[in-house]
Length: 63
Image (cartoon, helix red, strand yellow):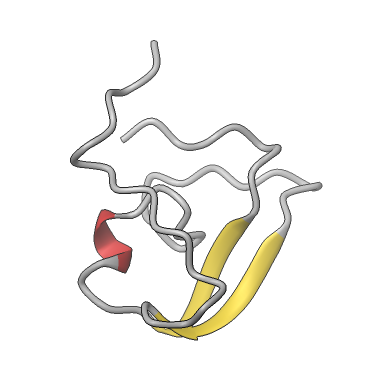
């Protein structure tokens, strides 16, 4: 997975579901890169209204 640039707000759900494991915005993804100025929004889970899903499997990796 290519992580999102640092200008994106990442998501840290209290109860991550299967959809979170396939999301580039998930802050706790093992391949995610978090910088000092990375914004993180806390959500209740994958059905939270603040969740904006960026699927890993459907987006091409930026090179």
